[in-house]
Image (cartoon, rainbow over all chains, first blue to last red; front, side, top):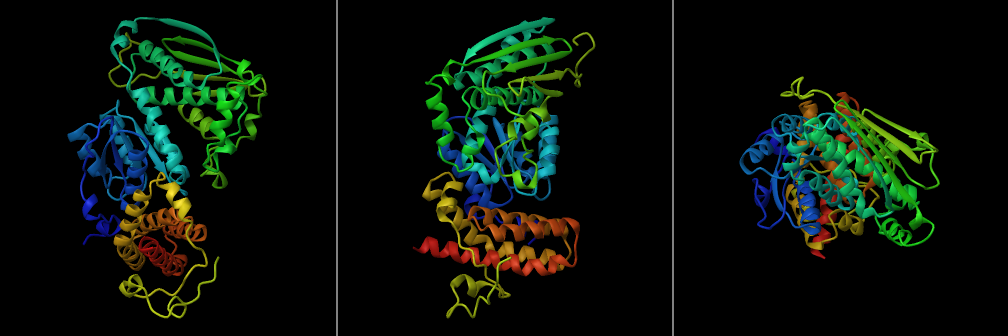
Length: 327
Length: 141
């Protein structure tokens, strides 16, 4: 038996990449440890209608992607042969429209930064997998499901300005983030992981403004895994003064730069007081994860007005295949 | 760190899992699993929890062998992966001290620390075995 086989035990029922025969998106789960693989399978199959594929390391995952074209890949980081970081890098290079979500463990702090830079769309701490994996998967899938027909029509636009004043309704977050990302994609003729990452950053910024800003709910309420956080947000979205607050979004996109100004009407906060999720004491906590993702995915994230206003900027970078004319 | 009484003096008769264990481990943690936490960790479906626990019961000896062989052969990469996987099991069962020890072993392997690794490996192996015993008893109930 090889050393890898010792590390990556595989029971008979989990021996090869196999698919559950259900409807919905096809999701490939990659983990060398059968216990974690089964847990992730159970969580996703319980939470959403989807077809699940599985692979025990990055090398097998690449074979599965070539043969079965999943809609999304959920992968562990530490695996034999091709690890999670290498897998994300290869997928980003060869399949830029295939989003990836990374499952992280205590001790993976530095690798999280590397894997997001390599093209991962988002990450979920394994300690919070049951609470967050389905939500993150649906969020990322919602981005990747957008149609690309309009993309070509709008590609010739040179300057785009929009301004929104929205009611405090969490349901508007994802559509607005997707719309804003699509404007950038049309202007910059860009698809792939930059689009996913931009949309995730915008969703995090809008989520912070709606939940923490206008609705005033504290992310610490999510730590115990109960529904208190969501129940409180739902209740306040119907009550004054929280329901009376508005969300203001200004967007300016040129062929070189995109700027998003998001302002809430909450009580504000001190951004420098938010702990990094990569601190040892904070790695399994949810607080600070949104700001961390924004900073990873955008060129700059600047707060003003006591945290009530955040400005996110992204500068266009030429990709392989881009021409000076198209830029 | 917890005190680790001798596993075999603490029990009159070894469990099936302990009979299968070779070499026998020396330590036992004072922690015990949080099954409600484990159920939440797999999404709340008892069937999924049973499946996950059964997989661990089927595979724990390989995990322990991997820890031992990697340590003896100074295969630091394999040791890191094995400790990482042990850590996942302890996190699932909310065995916080065991999780800390597995993390310490993972970090010691990353540092290729030939002093700390031989001390931690038998302890983490004991944690793995004890976890398998708990899982077996849970499924038998």
